[in-house]
Image 1 (cartoon, helix red, strand yellow):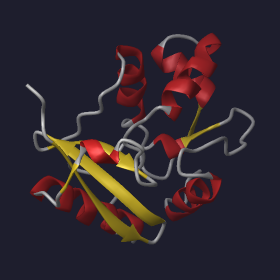
Image 2 (spheres, rainbow, N blue to C red):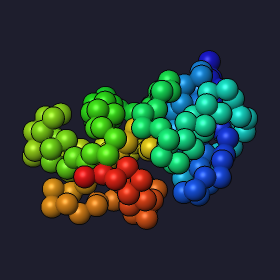
Image 3 (cartoon, rainbow, N blue to C red):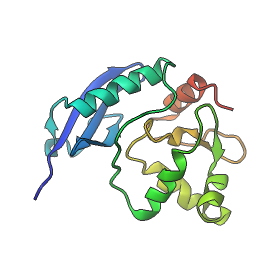
Image 4 (cartoon, helix red, strand yellow):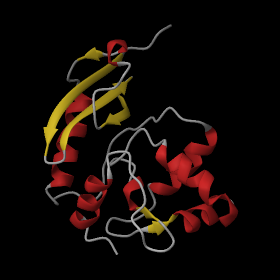
Length: 157
């Protein structure tokens, strides 16, 4: 049985975003219209609307932690990485190497960085809080400009 995938778009201070859900759980946040857009029903559901409200509060500096039902559809390893990402406190950063140590060992920093880059729920699962060991900002799905803005918003150290 095929599950209904709903999606809706919003204009935010960081640009247009698309939020998707299935079975009342947020599954994706996109910084541009997804290539498989035709597989979704364009509909603002209750959970998508709540996610957008919380996201706007976060972007205004009025919310530090999201309270949403999330269901990222990822591999078991990526899920392990995402589970660690949600533990990074607002305003703090961690290096890819330190994140790898929490999951397995520092030799897996590249695998962790790769899994971090596959986060289907950026912002809601704060992959922007992960930086290089030398303090460099590293990459970000939404682009470096947005990552810098988010870290500045959180006054991340």
